[in-house]
Length: 121
Image 1 (tube, rainbow, N blue to C red):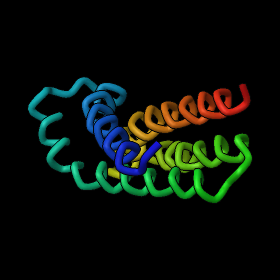
Image 2 (image 1 turned 180 degrees about the vertical axis):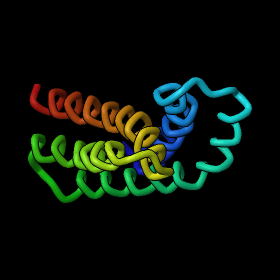
Image 3 (image 1 turned 135 degrees about the horizontal axis):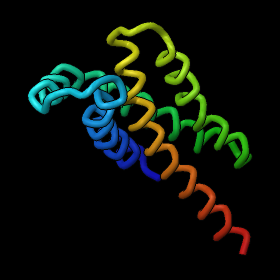
């Protein structure tokens, strides 16, 4: 999977995560959600870029499928640890990051497995 595709998917899913994350904490009005999108636009973009470069680097440097899948779960583990802290902006970023980066990495893992199976047949 190309790096640009991973970054675009990650960013779109992070924006969707910004819509979903406030409902995990409290019922927010849509006006607040659009404010959150404006406020957390840059962190979503940064998360998508970092994840895209990490996944692409993992694809290039690792040969083992299990290791690649494990490396795909490391950002999710870090975001999960950050989301368990007390309420703060970092907790919100980690929450929508889990949604966005989790969906992106799941698509990436499925694509890796399909490529591996197609190569072995």
